[in-house]
Image 1 (cartoon, rainbow, N blue to C red):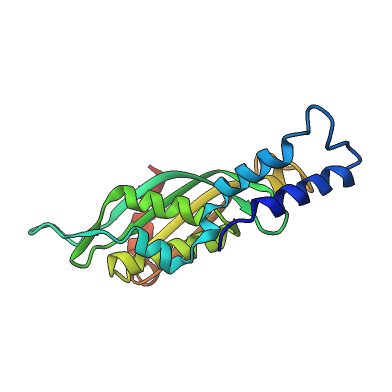
Image 2 (cartoon, helix red, strand yellow):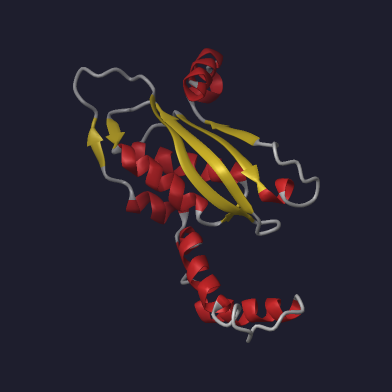
Length: 193
């Protein structure tokens, strides 16, 4: 599915009119085009299913001989997304992704690329975690996946309750990360360091 920039331009122009402004005034003349280009970029992930993202970033390597089956953790991956309820920015988001290798390891930058592409959709923070976990399970062939996300939501900080300090923390735990309480504690200590 390709993002329809012409439709976005038309609708943004209509929003400007609905807000009581003149879309033909100097400061707004090019706004519909700018917003369409921005949406094409920030919603790039909407062009792909989770399976397609997994295929895009699936290159993995044999686990080095003699290495342990210990946690691989990529933490503090910075992403942003847009809440599907208000189309409001979710920002200052930090994603931590962990897995326990099962014979294959993934290039570390692929983990960050997966998180970034999943976030570039109209999303819920909870779904970002479950989408990343699904993709990671597919590409690593490991059932032991954890995704921890902390972020701010402008639908809470800039409108409604207007609580600028509120943060949302979500966890998606699969396999051993879900069933082993000691492993969960160890993971959270690593994430918080």
